Length: 395
Image 1: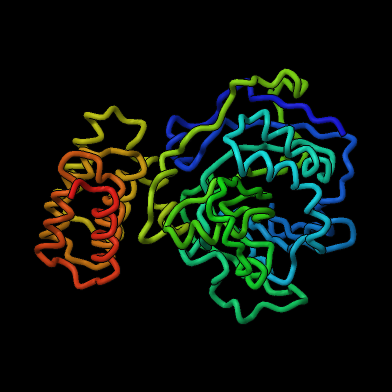
Image 2: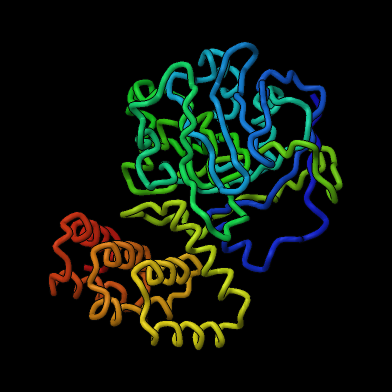
């Protein structure tokens, strides 16, 4: 097998793309794979609608999972838990070196690439995009990644099409965010206690849309969900017919000091994980505001708030300010939310996200006052705030 790497020469992304990918932990690395085994392959793929497609992924003759994508909306089909790489024994030798590298050290991107060789060798020849990103161990509906709506309809024949999200929006730049398991829940629940202390970076296969199929790391993804955290993964996504404007080079030329980093949300805890609808709202906020100078952003936002906003619009503003890390404007909202938007969903989103900024001056006082004044009878929210204050605050 030959693996060559490169980065794009042109930058066609909008100015706010880096913020849209608030879970990104590395640059996009483009790979060109040739003369591989090609056993982890896209089989029986066919057109779906105008530009969509559906099919399944196999290792040799063993089915891994089915997928479906309609390009008019950022969605993937729910996969079926009875498939796990056909036979787990096929994966163990391929992942042995990778697990050794990621579990006991913080490797460079070059070390990760080299450790991934046995997995990359399983792919069909072609161009791929690879990056490290913080994924959410949830569905696009915000629930645990094994708890899909309508899960009781899952059949071994895998004939049911069940999109995670079917909303109309301006979202046209979906990015890897949600994990879909390819291992049975029963096997994932057989977690060894010695796994908790391991670092771990999962491996996912992505298509177009928010969803990536988790190939390795189910135990750690489960642990991340229990802790309300994100789970870092290497996302490998096929580019189909190839990529232009990339100068491919030998892996030996890959910079030894090129590393991955923390994303905006790496250390965050989520009372409620963002859904696909939340991400679409956030994207719309970015589209409206983030190309404006900060002074103009503040003026435009103030004018919008003076008019009064619907609950949905206020959620859009809360999430837009939070994921763009606009702390000053976010904190200014608190008085309005306290007196004008006494809605449970607004409180959960605003104060739940605010706990991630406890180290910022004044935030602990706001959250303490929220609890003292008993503004919410949501026990889950109140407990989450109290636990975060004890964990991170200065009490």
